[in-house]
Every structure is written in C-alpha cells, then in structure tokens.
Image 1 (cartoon, rainbow, N blue to C red):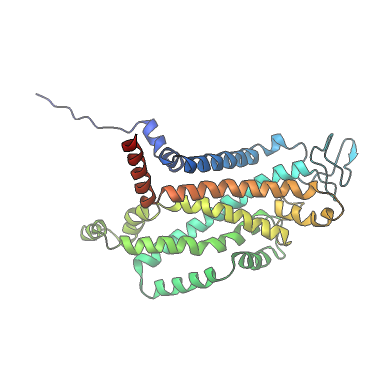
Image 2 (image 1 turned 180 degrees about the vertical axis):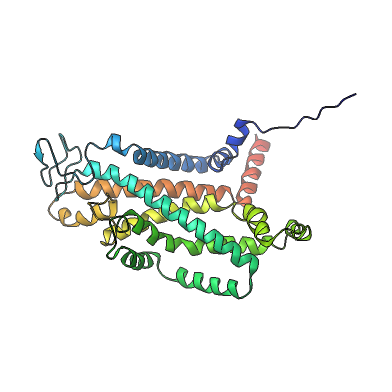
Length: 324
C-alpha cells in the first residue's frame, strides 16, 4: 500500500500578503491605516510621475526654446506654460516633473549603496569582533557625529570638483548622501549580528563545520536584515531632503545636467521679492508632498512592526468586541 505525502506550497495570494507593505496594510486599522494609505498614495504618485516623466513633461528639463522661438522669462501660469516659466526661461511644470525622476534616481542609488556597504561592514564587524570591530565602530561614530547635510556638502565638493558631467551630476549627489547613511545601517546590522552570533543555530552551524563566511552571509545575514525595509523607507525621505538641501545651497546638480527641486528653490528666492510666486511654490510643494508620503509610509510601518503596539491594538479590539 503506497502512501503519498502532500507538501503544502504557498499560493501566490499568500506570498503577496507577506510583502512588507501589504502585510502592514492588513495589520493596520483606524487612523494608522489612514496614514499608511495616504502615504502610499503620495509615494505611488511620486514614483509614477518619475517613471512617466518623458510622457508627462511637455518640454525637456533644460529646454528654453521650441519651434515658436525662445521661451519667455518669468511668464505667468497659463497657456502653453501651465505653471509659468523661470527667470532663465525654463518651463516650471517640466522641471518639476523631471525633478521627480532625478529624486528617485538619487534616492535609489544612495540608499542601495548605503545598504550594501553598511550591511557588509556591520556583518563583518559584529561577527568577527576584536580590533576590527573597535576600529569600525569608532569610524562609524565619528561619521555619525557630523551633521548629515554638512557631511554631504563636504563629500559633494570632494567628488564633483573637476570631474566629468556624470560625477558632477546625479552620481556625485548620490555618493555624497551614501556616506551619510552608511553608519546607520552599520550600527543596526552590527547590533543584530552581535545578538545572533550567540544563538543556538549559529553554534550548530559551527559544530557541523560551516565556514565563517557561510555562517555570516547565509545564517546571520538572513535574520539580521529583517528591519531593512523599515529603515529604507525612513531614509528615503531624509535622502530627498538632503538632496534638496544640497541643491538649495548650490552644491547639488547643475540645471543643464538634471532637474532638481532644491536648485529651483534657490533660483526662486529672488523671484519671491518681485511677486513671482510660481517658480518656488510648485517645486516646494513637490518636496513637501513627496517627503510627507515617504515619511507616513515609513513611520506607519515602523509603528506596526513594534510588537508592543500590536499587542495593545489587539487588546483594544478584544475589549471593543467584549463591550459590544
């Protein structure tokens, strides 16, 4: 008599429910869910605008003329220029749309570089320990002690000075922000690694003869990086603010290389005194809405990941049902 063993395979629907954002959305309720939904709507709108910028923007980010001739300077919103033009003759609507694409590129490159370097150094430092751990901790604390914007300005000057257009543009801004975030990922992963290397499953891997690198990158890495999606969403808004700060102070991306909201705000300072409001309002609103969306998503996920808050929420639900 033959017996068959049935292996349960997770369905596509259950796998989708396990995704970080979807799982947190299902756990949320009331005001918490409202904040998360608003954040997701703003974030998705930001990402779609960046992805569809070539289709949405009527002109290029540095275009100052078309078949009809040169664009007017400081033209009021209306007609062909629905959000007006700047003192340099750029279309405000086009530069705002293209600025979303620049922001996404800088955030992705900066945060991914930070995660890669910070996670690697955190694993090595926390697991190996010794003098290497002490040196890396001192360096991380020294970098973390500097104000993030000041450190990004210094790195931007060092990287972009005298370099090509690539290094003087998006890559220079991204690498400048990368240095700011590396200590954050390093400290989180190192703390988790120090805790995990004393767990029984790590000791078991040592007993069966697993190498140090295999233990670090297969066993410890998998368990130490569970909080990375939360840190990523929180750092994304900070990266955008740092990028805008660099551009506003004149250390960001030049207007002929890419469109950047902080630079446009810097150029709009002189316009505000003469009553030209449209050159600064629209880039400023774009920064506020994007940062608000990313922050709401990150803070909501961070709160929902806290087991103490989940326990309180479940207790309130049970109390409400009992009262009913």
